[in-house]
Amino acid sequence: MSKLRKFTAIVTAAAALTLGVTATSGAASLTKNPDPTLVVLRVPTKVWITDGEAIVLSQETNKTTGYSWTVKVTGDTSAVKVDAGQYEAPASTGMVGVAGTTTWYIKALAPGQAVLKLVATPPGGGTATVKKLTVTVTN
Image 1 (tube, rainbow, N blue to C red):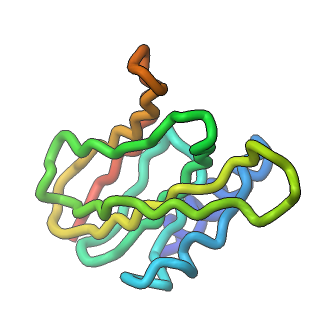
Image 2 (cartoon, rainbow, N blue to C red):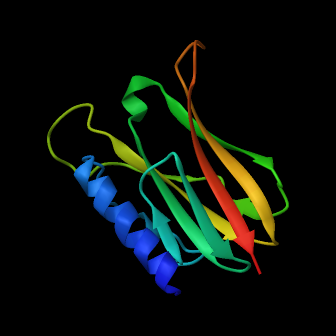
């Protein structure tokens, strides 16, 4: 891993912890690649990866509210492949309404720049919340 990627991963993790975002073990539960190049814990942000590398993106999800997350890829859609996402329920805490985590595995396929729009749709329609992750793939 290059020094820039290591620095970016450290800064992203530090910022996420500062902002109160919980790091997850979502990478371990993915069967496609248990050792990703980068784990993204905070959006919006931009990341740069090399063709063939992978990203794990985790987003806090509270299914009890009726909101659901989807990912839409725009820009150079052939640059990345995004899986459907996996929801992991929270550990049993005895508390009702505790959020879990949705995790997406993103594989770099070819040089280009894709924008992943994470859309939280409220139950019954309404205004969606949109977060963006810009992924630049280099060779």
